[in-house]
Image (cartoon, rainbow, N blue to C red; front, side):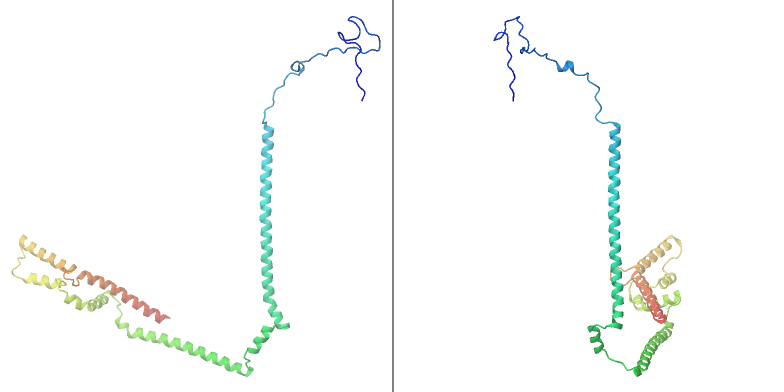
Length: 268
């Protein structure tokens, strides 16, 4: 590296005196450089651009839209691949089933397996001459079964015919049957009195006045007392008319259910 040449004249230190020009081809003292202010030499400031422009917003929206479309496409593709795999798996299962179904038939006619051979050894061989006998036996068994069912049906019809006179075909017949069934309870109850009989006794009783307000009040009072006695018990734990009416309704329902059951058995 070549060192710089040292100047031959520096005022106040060495070299020529002030005002004396050095000879030609001699090194002169460098002139002092001018100091420039950056603020003065810098170009004037321009207007600053906004951080977000409409173009940037549009490009961002388009980029987001492309990403959404791409994600949707990937999802659709994934679903399609899964469906194709399921369809292929289903077809393979169906094909395997068909193969398993067809294989024993083919194997039976070509090469029977060891279990089939063992099963054939244990199987009872039926002579062809007995086939007609077996068919006739099956036919007889079927005829016997049909005859037994027909006999049971006829027996149900016969029972229905014998019990037809006990059926309640009208409301009067039903009321008479219920009254007959509850006759003992109706008569033995001390509170269950006959309204018509008591009213006849009141009408024939000469001690009861039938005219005037007093007679009317007495008759109404006795009638109310009789009605109260007929509608319920008087605290003696005996069966009253109200309980008998409820029992009548229950008995009517049981009779209808039994009739329907007998008719259903006869129709079978």
